[in-house]
Length: 294
Image 1 (cartoon, rainbow, N blue to C red):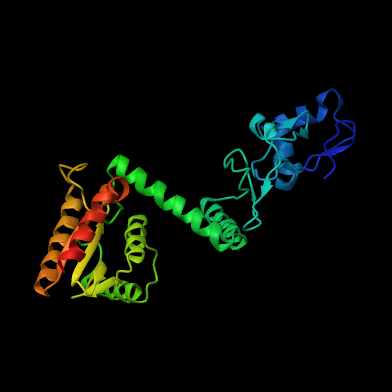
Image 2 (cartoon, helix red, strand yellow; image 1 turned 180 degrees about the horizontal axis):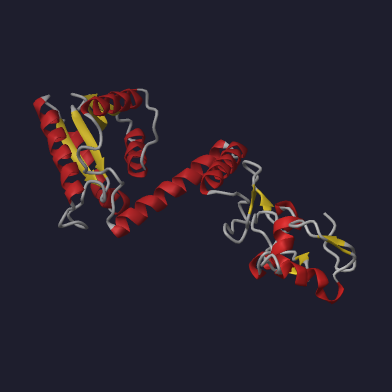
């Protein structure tokens, strides 16, 4: 609508009385008889809500009038805002002041999560196998170091009642099948021990399953089982003299596995991560002595 102009003829939309102009406030004085001020009259009878909408795209407030004409913005806040951005995930326009995600260019946490997943997927697809292995190895190492430093296990370690018995059985069976098919990566300390067994031409079976428990290495000719225990997860007493509750649960599992091995006429030997990484000569001696006596 054309903005109000006091120089033009006016017709009162309350009573229908006409004025040739509003100079010297003739029309304004008339409105006082209706107990209404000029600005209120114009907002009620002259302008529509569309005419009074704030010029900022995402603001739906109505503006005030200045000398009978609508202001551009409803507040200083709106006048100072930059142009809205378009979400690259859903296409919705959003205010960068209330959600300052200019880097991700997303309108919500959900859209940001979707966009990050897409970007990560594209990034992984662009990597070759060597780069992927190096990248994920770095993540796993950093995570393990952080947990070891802060003495914080994964969210479900040692906790009970999280999964139903049926779910636990399904997870257990799926894990055993995965182990049988060798669909997982060896740990660093397992690779070191395996390399020495290969060097000595010692026949072994990796990821040996016995009574629904997985063991790292079986030496069938010697009837010996070798376990490579991480210091953190298996609570090496050298570093964890007072194991956490979840570590005590891990210790109990290790004891159960020892009993399973002995019950099936296998000798079981456990090597700590610290010894494998920093004192492997002693590990070699134990293995050599074992070969000499069996």
